[in-house]
Length: 263
Image (cartoon, rainbow, N blue to C red):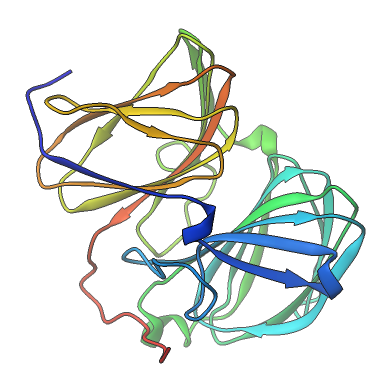
């Protein structure tokens, strides 16, 4: 690992994240980043505006509702969900798939899911003054389209980044779905003036290690925010069981004004 760097690592347990229920409690979401007033102590990281981890206790749905401007990604983790929108789309999201709505000048969509469905919904904010002038679009990317690498007990699926099939995104972001076997470790390069957000969704948890400081422990469902003023590396190691952790890297700041909503 390269020379000592000053890395700031903040760990936020579920009690510091937002929560919301839909369709009479059939669908429940833990929100590392949620809207103001939903309980999350952090409500945005640069252009990363919203991150919800949804679970369907039973079959349910969310009726048609509007979106404008934002780029909204839904990532299937388990089960199947049906997406419909006012562009005429009817599309199924399954495990490992990504659907991307670039809401542009505006559209409405509805979601219906089977019992056991699990997914992320992630909102990224481009420059909204330009975004709302663009035509809204919907795209579905299947699991097999995404590049995966496996080495030394670590499997990395690139959702956003080099070789990803998603190349039309306007907002600056990189995303990775990482699985780490017991005894292995995953090394991620930390870049200055960027934020790495991490959510552990499977396993017992683990630790983050960077040169010159003690390991920082985390558990499953914990949300981590990692920043550094210098370039370097951070190592992620599981504790006990195989670890599955989702990583999103975004600029700490952007050069355009960001949406502000009163609390």
